[in-house]
Image (cartoon, rainbow, N blue to C red):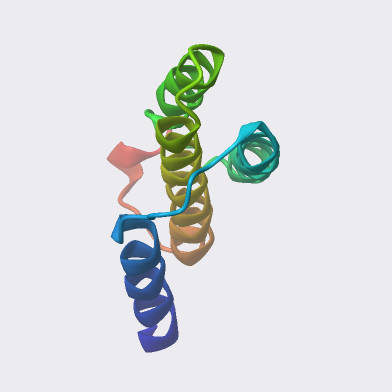
Length: 103
């Protein structure tokens, strides 16, 4: 559990520290592919969070307008949410919920 909390903390720091490098179309394409793969992995285990799709849509819009810094930042947010949602679902899959929570 401590390892997972530490991992999430490290990822949070990585994705919230501003990047001073100028992003381009190639870095956005790579970030978008990573985000979409993470989104699919989260969806496969039922852990896709609500805003992942919104971040990806906004990232594609930012890239279309030429703002690659914003587009990469949004794609990284989507990746973070997808990876965290997947980890959350995997951590909670063996919990015993009361019967009124199940279908």
